[in-house]
Image (tube, rainbow, N blue to C red; front, side):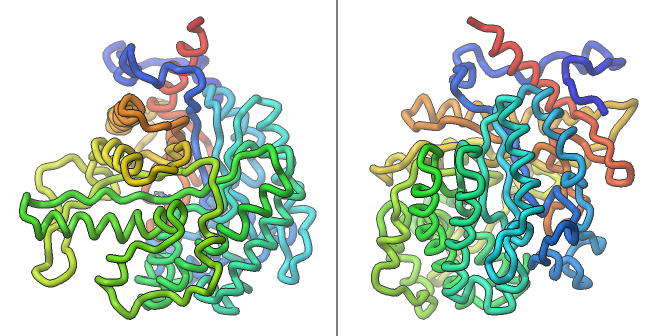
Length: 467
Ligand code: IFM
């Protein structure tokens, strides 16, 4: 496996090796304290789903259900990271990446009655120790969608009790891993857990009921709020935050109705999460639009959810263009003739800048931001030992330029994580969609560093060499 980007032997034409990535000379990306890393998630890369006492998760059940995941793929083996973690860390370090965002598989580390699973915990202890040895800053997400199945069997996230079980898990894991994590994120993308998992059934556990989705959302946020003080008590020196997918809604025309449609879309995707976290209240127009979908909120919940944060993780991929539906809601109007990725998502870097500058205006107490995911899927192939992912290279350069613009406009963005370190299990799309900056051949588990990763590595070497 080629794990040192500087040592990759290259037989391609000088033309294809011209550097289309390096940020502009005045870019904030050149600042040495701007953290540049890569991200993954447990179910998407680990495999070993029945090893060393790991319990089943909702994704094991969902992906084993015919028709739920493209080609019947499951995370049973994935990138076999559970066994190949040492070479994967060496690969990260060989690329010079400074940060690594990973997630812990809850069903791997905690038994159904709440007892620690030593073998599962040891895996993460060894992994984090090696990352520390390599000088890599670690962002650890507690929940990236792999809920233990036994909790789903008791009602999952629509059941309030799951929030308390999450706080117990946060307590266990932060006592065990205290001192070895630089930043904890409680949840990854609660909107997706709630709406894709319980609202439309595209993700595990595959339920489709709007009321379940809103109640799940409230309990996810409550779980976050309950966990933050626990993490603070057990591991006082690390940063604590949350990671959310943020949706950019643009209006299809200047009409007031279309402008309102775009506004409502952003309320439903962004304010739904940021208002409770940063203002301690749900946005009013959310439930005005969808009356009767309000979750049950108990006294004190909103104060719990608004626990102060050290950072906000923003995941950004694309925009949604919207028009009024002629009634009270909105409808999507996909623009024509625009560049799209393998997911069909529009490439729209301005959306990232506009979201960031918008959040700064809206929230006086906006914490420092890390872009915890950004990247794109492409149908990458290995040719003569190389992967020339030209679309991704341009994508990354343009999105990093958008981040720079936001920083110059006064937004405190402190880092950026590529999604993803390597190709992996892309949920309902299985292994077909390749988001990695490293290619994975799933038949052999061979990792091949793509051209995008080589260029990021080159930039990091140049930045390091500057005095
Ligand atoms: O792969 C996912 C990740 O798990 C969560 N954010 C979006 C990515 C791409 O769909």
